Image 1: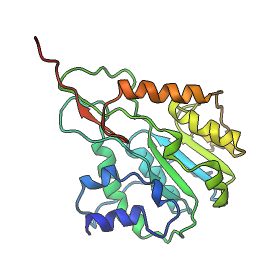
Image 2 (image 1 turned 120 degrees about the horizontal axis):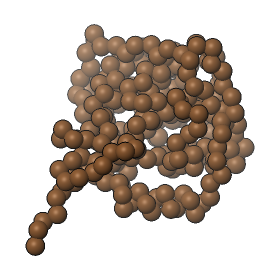
Image 3 (image 1 turned 90 degrees about the horizontal axis):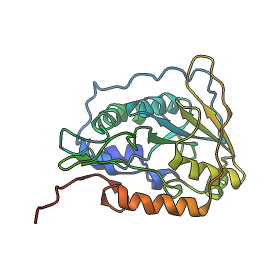
Image 4 (image 1 turned 90 degrees about the vertical axis):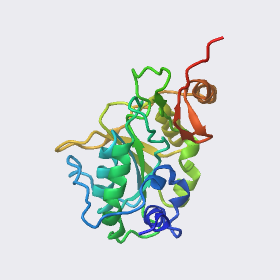
Length: 246
């Protein structure tokens, strides 16, 4: 299976959500082994499929992919939004290799699922992306990242595809600050936002979303420009070089 064939499984040309798939991590594995598989993610037994619900899965590391494949068997199309590089140093902000391994392991499982082009999306984030508490220093690889509303379809685009509700799946009671801007825009534009913390018997409930402003979004972008290290405009990850003495 070539790199293009692998990416086609995750971002089929005929699928309406493929333009949002981030290709960053797919360039880091060249083959898929028939023996690879990914475990079923527990705690989602109560979630029934619905064509008008889009998912935002914000779980740590490979758990996000495991949950997505579990729910893909119920009709949701996984849309990976991972945009951090894996790096090659021992001291790295966010371990990305588990994501690459999970994507590779899940590829054959996804290829066997008969998802239609209009299947509702399941947007995938890594809950560890901001690496709180990690301190950058010379010769470390800083691949901390954040998501922006532009990483997701607009509420208008979602409604055009029949989406009226958003379900956020995460382990915490409130969304992360960066994701809040996207959720608030969707909510203000008429989409219903609910939250599900996976667990036996867990049920969706209204998602608490704090008030944000356009100025707050601008400030988040401004701060991220100076505090996060990009390899290019929308890809995060760069080795921090020690300042030369003079």
